[in-house]
Image (cartoon, rainbow, N blue to C red):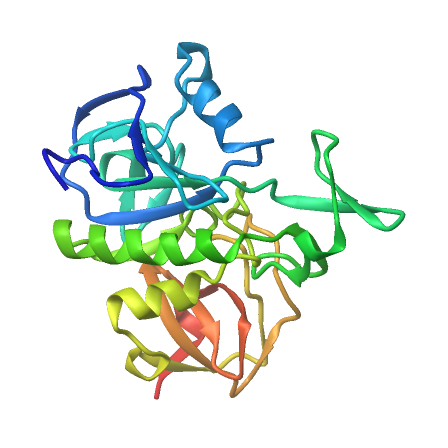
Length: 264
């Protein structure tokens, strides 16, 4: 790291015009590009008309392209909230990983929204933590996941970042990246050294408590209502709402009203 830029083998710098303002980052946010290739994403995010960017593009071969220094805001988060803050562009480093996102099964292939067909070994059938039903997702490569972990470790250590999250966490009403094909919780735990046992735990007191995709009654439910006595682990608090994860089913997480939780 030199002057808020990565240096080393496999790292390039292509400056984006889509940036602005000083940044003292507190968080690291992972995304998928939902694009055809790392090159196409770099080309797009360095055009003014994109009105979007990120600090890093992580390709499927593990190579990295930096678009903005880490002490400058990039435009990756959009309307977003986390840990009582709004507008995460002003508080976070953004990493876009080259990945097509959700896929549709077509015969024995799996098709991205832009038409590219992928073989079965590049597809993962999984349920997103914010959705009720599983679907197909583009798999990340092993080297990509390993490099993502290494980047997270470096950036958290260098900038003393508080948390590692996904776009799906800071904008759950509209985003699903990096999706269930990426082991975000593993990366987060490995980098921050946290475990489920260290999180505050609560018990549901209502007979049937809705668990929603966002902190408000206007957000849809992400699973069947939680029964009285269900144990949950706290992920985040915002006003009268808490983001929780089911202790016995870590694949389910969402927002519940604080009124119906009792600390255990």
